[in-house]
Amino acid sequence: MVTGATRDTNQDTAVMYERDPATGWHPVTDPWPAHNALHGWTEDHHQGDLRTPIGVFGLTDAGGRLADPGTKLPYDRGPAFSASGTGFKGESLAGSFDYVVAINYNRKPGTTPLDWTRPLGARKGGGIWFHVDHGGPTQGCVSLPKARMKELLGRLDPAKKPVVVMGDKATLAR
Image (cartoon, rainbow, N blue to C red):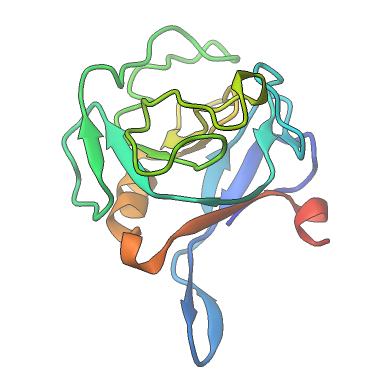
């Protein structure tokens, strides 16, 4: 679960949960710091709005510039997972795509995170990932510290059909 305090925040908290059939949902990690898009969250994401989509999305595919750290998800490694330039606060983006997990918002599950197929159309955006944090807001993704990205990749099991629930607290409470 990735939760922002308000609709316009770009600083969040992420916690992993697992469901026990007998006792329900339980946290399996401590809270992790996270970033999302510059302008916060939205229930109607569009390409270039600098907001992160709110909702429940599958997590089926991973990749990165670095070698697979031991995930059970399909992992696509290669130089195309390179980021350059600077972020909104002037921070370097180098290493941001060392590890990624595709968030199944407007994408074709079961393909590399680099697949730009957009079932809802290009206007609805896409390319929403978990990726390595670069110290500032994202274009629309959710970023986590590198060690937490490795932990996330190690914990995700496609047999358990992992999802992310993400958004601001007020919207998620509805």
